[in-house]
Amino acid sequence: MRRLTLILILLAASGCAAPPRPAAVSPPPVAATGPTHDVVSAEVVIRVHPDGPLAGLGHSHLIRSDALGGTIALGEPVGATSFALELPLASLVVDPPGAAATVNDDRRAATRRNMLGPALLDADRFPLLDIRADGIEGGPQQFVARVQVGIRGEHRPIRVPVTVIVAGDLLTASGRLALSHRELGLEPYSVALGALRVAEAIEVEFRLAARRRSGA
Image 1 (cartoon, rainbow, N blue to C red):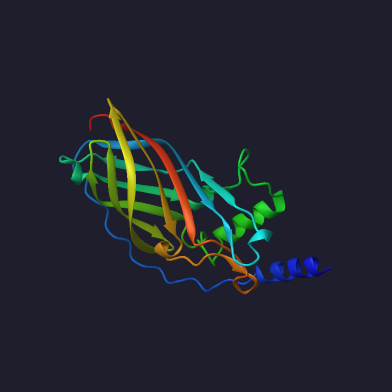
Image 2: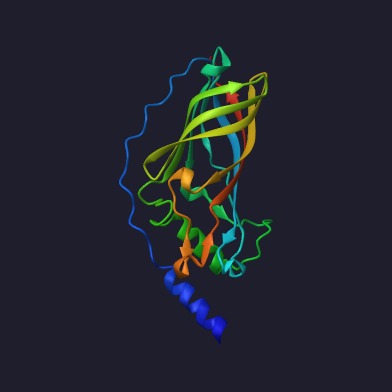
């Protein structure tokens, strides 16, 4: 009975949502300086984990999208490389088939609804996550990109380690990084006054392929 009461409290608290932040003006796109490549395939995988005194009642989740798109302009020199990418938030899938999490369909749907809702990503008002390069350093294959991530109408600077390989007309890029909700201007989802919440850390992996535009 005590456990049932606790679950009912958590479900009631899950309906609370923080007010959305006001929109901010996006920075202008970075000008292309070299051959332009269009993204033709991509995969983004995000992992989050439960935290707090009641973390045992929560689940780790894998969130995936294959809808990242945009363009990459190779710079000459490489430090002038620029890119502009967009990820439709509606494309995010929570715990797709094959994911390690064992949650039922109702909980999976509730997790996605909370993630896209006004308390977190506010996808109805801000349907796209955009990523623009400030610059790139390193090489010849291992780089660190300085990027601006646009989320909820605000842009946040982060540094992204990335492996880039160019073979003929095909460019491939991949990497993994650890972020925090705070770096993205987000508040981790929580219930029961924070006794059960999403951990601050966010694990991200990405892979994409881009093909050189004809005539570029």
